[in-house]
Length: 215
Image 1 (cartoon, rainbow, N blue to C red):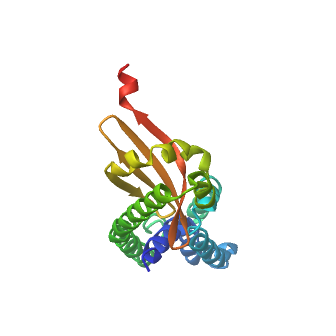
Image 2 (cartoon, one colour):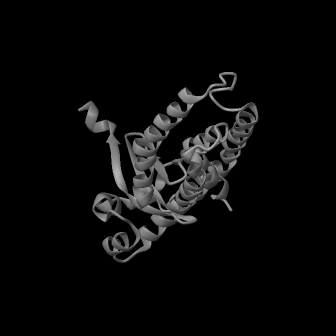
Image 3 (cartoon, helix red, strand yellow):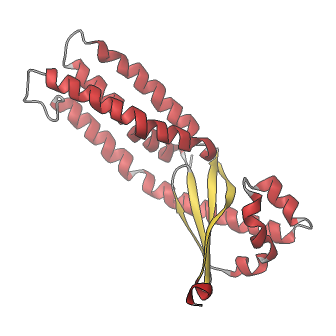
């Protein structure tokens, strides 16, 4: 339930161009573009499915933004230029504009609290993972079993006590999260990816040491 609203919102906004094409096609009789509604539904459900797998979702995201959105824009402009009634709002009937605007307002405002809870969830999971790593008799084996890129976390395993003392905060998207641990002279950014309704540690891809930078 925590991710349901966030997943609905992500799928809605990414698949919105196809929905606009469908609404635009309804104002033009006998247009072949009405197939865009079943395509929108398929696309929407596909995004809803893949957003829960953070390792694969970046492929879906690239497909949406680099291919589907530009193609949809070209199709929409084509339909817009064929329209004879220019009193429409952005090429859509008023009722369609109101419908889309209401959905956008609902979907844009509703996931804020869910993402706040997701931040708390991923921070709690991170702290639990670091605690288990510190207690593990074979830390390298633990990293291999519980992370995607264990080689990036070997230094963390060697200095786990110091890492656990640092303050933690998170910045979360529906499919991934950055957990930042910082002390006075260093900062480490852990990347977590969605794993259905939970999280999995991907790796440590960015860290800063301000003491070294001063030298």
